[in-house]
Image: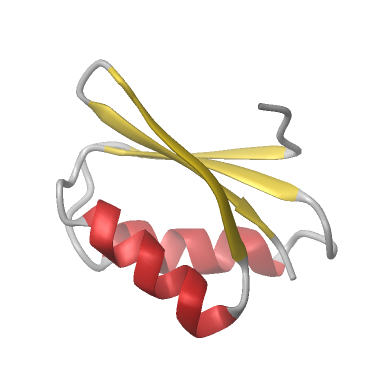
Length: 75
């Protein structure tokens, strides 16, 4: 999937992946896609909830080795 910016939150525990995701999205324009890498298993539920609460669309998820991958489209 194409993306405009990447955030590597590997090794960070809750709530830091979400905090850094929010900060990264603030620097982006509407319609751009942020790719987030995270290793915290809780980030799967956290990213889904973050997307629903903020209106930033979770357009894709996956896994690369030990990392979870999320694609968020800025509203």
